[in-house]
Length: 302
Ligand SMILES: Cc1ncc(COP(=O)(O)O)c(C=O)c1O
Image (tube, helix red, strand yellow):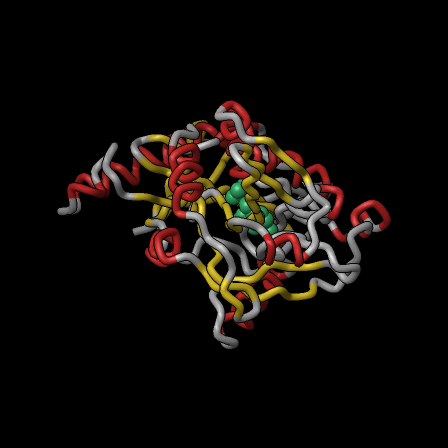
């Protein structure tokens, strides 16, 4: 079940459309060039988590891409319409977990493309669909990762703004190819490294590591200066963790840091906190207590 709502100036609350029927022009540059931006947010317990942060990053990705996207109010209205419609359909389905406020998890996607060439306007829509079961499973089981070279050095973002580093664009074919490469080589996920040997991010996640020193717990993530996407989950979790007494650090991080950490996780909005259990085939340290604590903090983020 996927619900689809287009942002349409003639329909202030958004225009509901059939997600199973053709809706998009074959000339749309989102399709022909992957030219557009997007966000994926978690819908759970009747609320879209971190919607403000997702809307802010969507605007920032659009700015970096020189793309005009609808104003926040239009997105909020379309998201409200989409989740209401999703809840209606879930109510009609048999499962209590799918009912509004239940435990079921859904993905809310906000997508904006440059539209058809020459049309002078973009195309923007919201979808809501059930969250993939694999992500939930990996939260429990953890993931085996490979380090893969992204092919850029860690200063490229400053030198080459046309690479749109730090923007969440629709051009995810490379990220998906990296995941396929991992899966055909005995792993589940990827941590990209820069050509000058820094840890960057996952294809769809931010990297976190923790170190314990006596009573002190330190949570570290790679610096944004490397051109990685500013993760909303990492940002919100760091605020929570600091309040809970953790020390925070923002890279630079090198592969050896991950191998020597007490625990490493991949975090993202839908899969949430996923422990990394091995890197390049070697088991690494995991910490059930820290995983439980950070999972609790992430669950509390609204
Ligand atoms: C490349 C990349 N880095 C990091 C993240 C994590 O971002 P967030 O926590 O906002 O979902 C994502 C999310 O999909 C991503 O695609």
